[in-house]
Amino acid sequence: MPLSNCPRCGKTFNRLPSAKLCPDCQEVEEQQFERVYTYLRDHPGVLIPKIASDTEVPERLILEWFRNRRLLAKDPSITWPCERCGIPVSEGRLCQRCAGKFQASLGEHPDASSGTPRKPGSADAPAGHRPDIGHELRGDKYTR
Ligand SMILES: [Zn+2]
Ligand SMILES: [Zn+2]
Image (cartoon, rainbow, N blue to C red; front, side, top):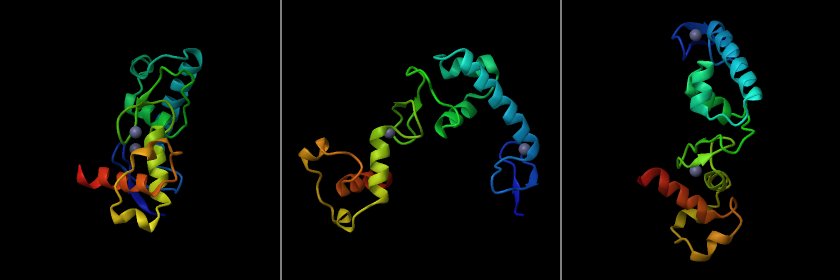
């Protein structure tokens, strides 16, 4: 089993493929998750900073649970920033626009690298399958 440092307490532990924390921290985090989960069930629509202060669970952790869909926002007013562009999202890690770009970049067509300028009409096209969107994604990543 690979030895790994716990990202939370820094302790070295035998890392199971499914575990990201050492067993101690894993347990603490389970309890925190349970607390937030129960809190959300009783208080749908409470915003993340308030959830954090009422449950005494770090906001960062709560955000991570929303982002990896362990927690689901049942109220549209619960949002967190998109990991790419920072606009508020209420599901997953990316806003729909960035998620579309991300998918486009995964299925990228070789032509996309030839520097084709973005056509004004392309904005209406269904997101996610256009090679020129993939090109724009790369531009965002490396030139800014
Ligand atoms: Zn730990
Ligand atoms: Zn975004």
